[in-house]
Image 1 (cartoon, rainbow, N blue to C red):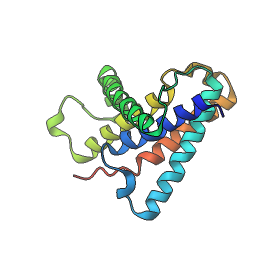
Image 2 (image 1 turned 135 degrees about the horizontal axis):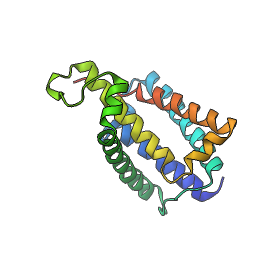
Image 3 (image 1 turned 45 degrees about the vertical axis):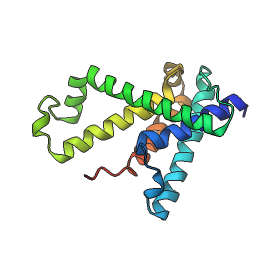
Image 4 (image 1 turned 135 degrees about the vertical axis):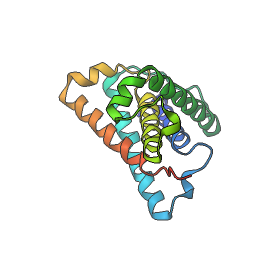
Length: 167
């Protein structure tokens, strides 16, 4: 694997933690759950590597050391979260319909609806992290590409389960 791709994947590694846990480290998970989280996260990064190879279009970080990569990862995570909110706002009606809730009646949201919206935002943020800057459409042109997309969804959803949505 070339060094540019390695740096991009490390940036994503850091960004995933920030998207899912914010300033908190995932180390708050129990030892067993933390191990499972890292196994799943590694699988997602490996899947992402294959997506990047298949799409052949990508921007690479300019970081020269691990600290710079971490900082770029955090910046990218914040951008992805912002984009997720924009996507949610842009497609509010379609998303609400898919989720069977009314987003405009925020005062009446009960806890399950808030959790569903939080999960959807995390899905969008992680998808944006992986697919931004790629030729995503090319993945749907082949059987292998479709498998990569489905694998990404499954791994993403599994990672999101490690986030606590408690008050």
